[in-house]
Image 1 (cartoon, helix red, strand yellow):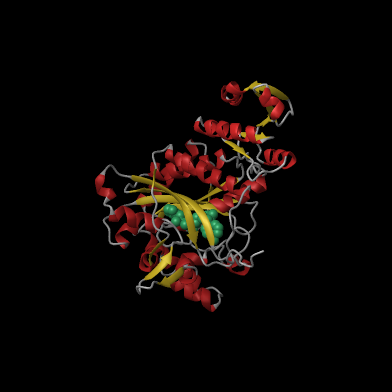
Image 2 (cartoon, protein in one colour):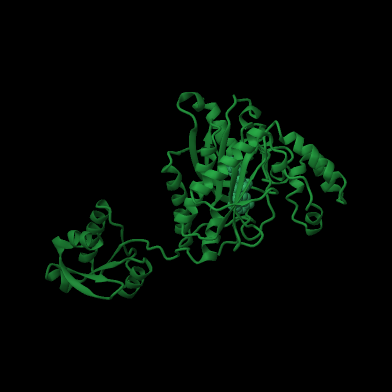
Length: 420
Ligand code: HAM
């Protein structure tokens, strides 16, 4: 056995579980494709400054969790810790915002990297499916994205995903709230690191998990009481649209996201079966990010769903399908003549869209039948000398055990019909 191991905080996706991951990604992607979101793919690494500026210098992600290295050419690059900054960079680079109708609706699916302390549900290499709608400020767009995420979780069979909703105000009202919050926090009994955070990013203090800190925050000023008229009306409309769509949510005035770019609508999807890493997805509006990256005004909204945690949530709810069949048909030849025949048959089946496999490397009958069972196939094709002398093969239903002869020239149509 090799002594090499996957790096700490990472894991390999291998069968049979890999099929479930693939399906989760596909269901999420299919859900947003239904709303016209198109696929975008950006490099796994970017100029370090993009994330520093985009995600925010005061965030844990930028301060503690980035995989940053200097290339042979002397450039500082960082493995992407999230997708939004990269997608916006790509849109601006290609001038997509000028090319057609706004919003530009994009989705992505891929690997992200954060140097976090590994634990269940928190990995250094993880997988997200994300969707971003760039270039429109419209409560319907915020609601659309939230509803799509809810629909994706539902399509995966999840029943216990909860939606937490908040707004963070905008450039008009947030500074007023921030100052009021800072005044309140400065008067509390807090450790040095938290005091420093009050000056840098006071909203993050609201997110402190420690009970002794939370106990002091019960009377902290709430953003809802500081919203300007526009932000308040916008938020009320988002809430109304969600309610009309039958989407339940909890207003969470303390919901603070771990990225600095958010304005107005912010939300998180949580699942109570996961322990401390309960967020299965999150997102919000980021109306000022484009300007921060040197682009034009491009108010936008988006989310990213965590694939790994969604799989854990499905496991917790008992809706994760594990034994996904590898193929529909498995051929078991009992002699060389049958091997030759079946090789042609499975080739033709695949060309007609039927998944099929056989044994390789000259295994005996027992090993071949075991392989057929393991493949999860619905049907096995079995043939030996006696069958071929009569120009038939045996078609075996692997669930019922029933077996019947089929004429060699009828194999393909018979299987097609049985599977349809
Ligand atoms: P985020 O909340 O940092 O948002 O990540 C979204 C989801 O990715 C989380 O809810 C979680 O399920 C998953 N995730 C994050 N870190 C890890 C980890 N270390 N291990 C496993 N899963 C993890 C964003 O990334 C924003 N870019 C979302 C967004 C898009 N906002 C606007 N547009």
